Each structure stands twice: as structure tokens, then as C-alpha cells.
Image (tube, rainbow, N blue to C red; front, side, top):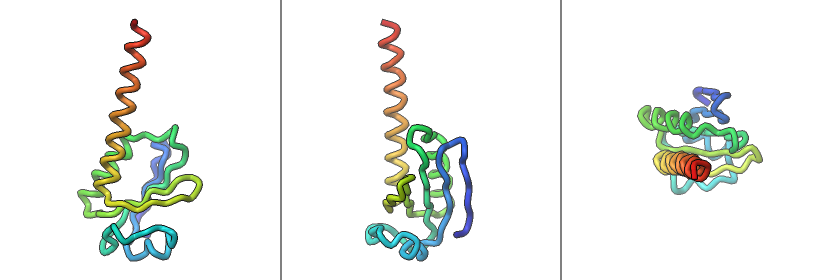
Length: 112
């Protein structure tokens, strides 16, 4: 583990990990489709209801700018999935857009 950055208000913990350590840390995860030669970002999500996707998106962009190519998302139950960091960022951005649309839809319903 190289660095741990805790985002208590964001509902997640992000830590940088060397890619070659991923196989022994997450033996059940399929790492064939990701780059394990450099750094990886391990994101542990506590409760999805408290997840701040805006902060998570900013952390993912910062990690990608820093050379991280792989992300491992870990749920509170311990399930882990490895993917390219850009794919994970796209998923987070999509969730953020859906949350915004749900909020707007709710405002339209209450105004009508």
C-alpha cells in the first residue's frame, strides 16, 4: 500500500496500491482485463446511500492524472471488481447524472 486517503464525508475510502499486489490482496478478482504494471486505486464503499459521487469522481480524475490505470471497487460486503479507471469514472459520472435527473424530476412533480 502506498497511500491511504480517507474520505469520511464522501462515504468511501480510496487508497493507492501497487498493481502487482492486487493478485495477493484480491485473489478472487479477475485481473486479466486490467493493467497491473503500475499503480491501482482501491475504492472501498461503505453504504451506497451515503456515497458522494461528486467527490469520488474528483478522486478518480486526480488518480488518473497521477498515472493510475486500474481501479478496484470493494463493497462493504467484501465483493471486489477490477476495471480500468476510466470505465469506473464513466460509471460514477453516469450515477451522478442520474441523481441530478431524479432531483429535477422530483422538483417538477412537486411544482405541478
